[in-house]
Image (cartoon, rainbow over the protein chains, first blue to last red):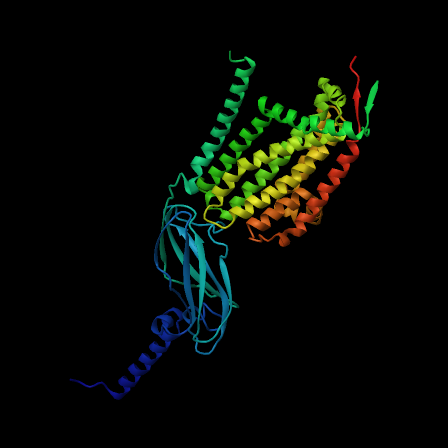
Length: 204
Length: 274
């Protein structure tokens, strides 16, 4: 095999080094090349989504009946080894069938939870109580927005939520009372009036 | 020409005899008039239908049934108290003027019963209709409160505030009824009742939170009663001492109405028929 001359070898080495530097300097390629590094486009402080993780500790497959309450629990972990972070963790519910986000007005009293500080490498657990208002299929996500930058929120894995309709015509035995009391009153007054009418000769 | 009847002190022996003969005579007459003519009965039936509709909707309607149980109970209690006030105003506002216009009041004044006692027994007859209406409402309160510890506080506080407000509204409406003809009396009484209920029932939350709304709520005994029910049933503040801030203005209103009632029922003027 014919060997390359020392001059040519040197030129090829310089080209390879230059190409490597070019690749590493491109932001997108750089992120792909080193996934552990922060994305400067996402965080002005050099810390981004990669420094926060949101995990679901409650069940990720929830089945319930309209009217029930379910609890969603999420752990927000600060992955940074030396920076304390603060931010808001909030919940998002999307109706799959109608492809619409749900207005959480009736679903949950607390939509967002402010977490004032998470120490380096620490985890904070947040909890949401959701009232299942309408039957349907939903996905639930927990998101975390860091304070002080415009980085994308950290997102939890999705929770699948299936809500079955509630069919209960007689909760708390309301039917006997709702129909029985007016009927009883009408019957009592009819009897009282009939007896009085009989006494006074109205009914012969 | 007006004829005037005032309290006169009869002799002691005659007084005892009269007392036995006339004990609650007007009340018994009103009571039988109420229930044999369906006048009082129709209030009970209509109110039971309203309570049935509300209780059924609160527990079965897709969205209403998702209300917190305390809030459902508060909604029902609010309706019971409001209906009690409307019933007492409508019934009491024509009790005296109706009799005056029908020409039957004169014969009542000719009996040994004093005018004040006539008015008091008529007031008692309205309160008695409320007691029956309250008895009708109890099963609904119990059903809507089922599964919570709020049934007893709901029954107790609705009874307390309902009775106080019915006494006050009836007293003021009977006083009006002795002074005005039945049409004006009914209008005036219903306007007073609506005025009392309006801040709680018709004002938006934002208006209630303004200085004007807050001042009106602080002055209004009906608002105090309804806010107290809210505090007991929604905020679970069931102890009586926690409600004194609401209870005292309501008691003050009752005392004021009874003073007016005592003053205005001292004598009645009956215009002679031609």
